[in-house]
Amino acid sequence: MDIKLSPIGTIHTPYQKDAPYTDYENKGGEFFIELNEDYTEGLYLLDKLNYCYILFHIHKQKKPPRMHIFPPRGNGKEVGLFATRSPNRINPIGLTVAKIKKIEGNKIYTHGLDILDGSPLLDIKPYIRDFDMKVDSNLGWIEA
Image (cartoon, rainbow, N blue to C red; front, side, top):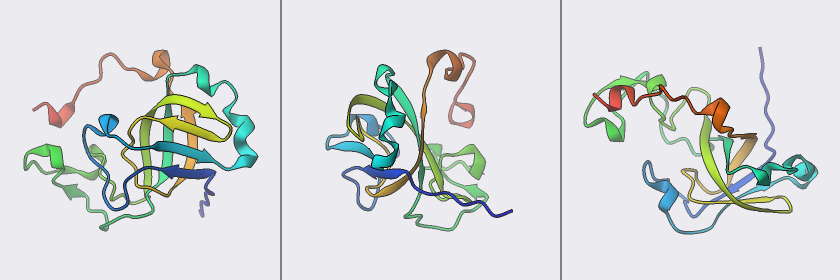
């Protein structure tokens, strides 16, 4: 099966080479998502939400994916790729939650993002507290 995706916009951040792994929501600089103008109408009422999911193509993948890695927050612990948020993926698809500051035309202005500048936007989905927040979620191997 051949799967083809087309970008629906571009993500703009101050990060050219490296994006932060932690505390990125408090970073300074301008962060916005620019949707292709053909899709602007699809933003209708998104500004009534506080957050949205951003799915993007990791266009500057640095390393080939490995099935076992040592994540930055792992304190030397080896874990499986799918138990991490490593940007080095088999399918280079990134996911983050963005706080919506404002929407003007085809641009969604956000707080800090953990995404490199120029990343192709694949999709936007609403983050809805009652559906998306799982009260029994945990930190898994990060807690141990």
